[in-house]
Amino acid sequence: QVQLVESGGGLVQAGGSLRLSCAASGSTLAINIMRWYRQAPGKQRDWVASITNGGSAHYADSVEGRFTISRDNAKNTVYLQMNTLKPEDTAVYYCNALTTIMGVSRDYWGQGTQVTVSS
Image (cartoon, rainbow, N blue to C red):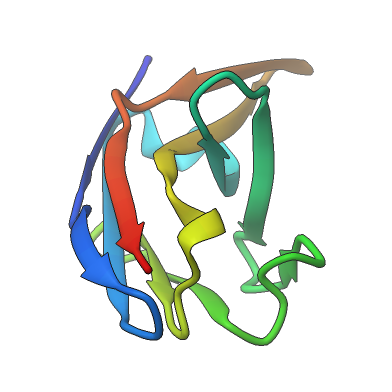
């Protein structure tokens, strides 16, 4: 079992910045990939960024060049630095952890943190 707790959301003006954090606990050694997703009202949950244990990061086209995902393995925490925020970035942001134990993969989710960008 893995528990994820996000923090850092809030209200910011367009062009501003926020940093989200996701602290993992439990069976953290089983985590292969950490990911951020977001879900705007009335829309599906979309992938935003991911980072592997080795630090390889990937981004959705919509956030490439503005968002940076990073992880501190000693603290079992993943971050999402969001710069040049736009109103369309408004959403609930969810942290996700993919674990693989004895060949079986499983997803874990945090409770989400609200990000609101005003124009």
